[in-house]
Length: 293
Image (cartoon, rainbow, N blue to C red; front, side):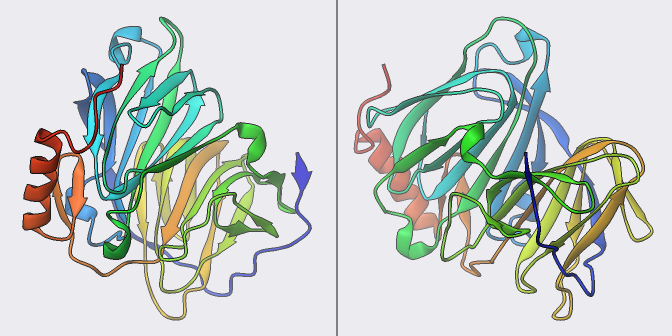
């Protein structure tokens, strides 16, 4: 693991505006998951549309996976903590995600894909984040990239935090995927008990963190495993400072809001209801292409 030689200077930290506990649900062919960020928070956490957390060592909770389904108008970022997931889409792309790997997919004008676990037992754990596209890019050509765990900067900060960087800038490192309009930050951070972490963030970005192991503290607020903390906004707030009372892991996610209308129905996210209707019509007429075989 690399050792970061730069320190993130944060003079005034964001605080916890609100704590959110994820809701148990299912998707795909009955995969059990926790919906951390849903449609009720899309405007507050613009440009992020959804965050699902999945994790189980019971095969019945995940084995059927996510068979063929369409998307249009946004990006999906799938991050595997444990287990193996096979992605196929109708553009001929195929990729196997394993421990620590990431897939960044731009649905754009529309595609059909499947995500199927490649295991019959053991732990399957990970996250899927939906990132909105600006109106000018919603009908861009679909694109995707598989990022192996070794492709992602992984480093230890001077304070002892261990960081995996998917996107954004942290402690002198740059994540491999950049987006000019939304400028997303996506970090996976491991803190030992008593360890602190600081991250500079642009004041105009919306930001949140999701604790999936242990507990962390921001000021006087404690965030427990399974909770999302929406971080406060303010022109003088230049980042976030937190510490852990027990060994903890969390995702820190931030992005520049698009401030555009959001219209979502199921797997389609556009700017108007008319565009949603058009997406359904295009899908029914086969304009997304054939299903994945």
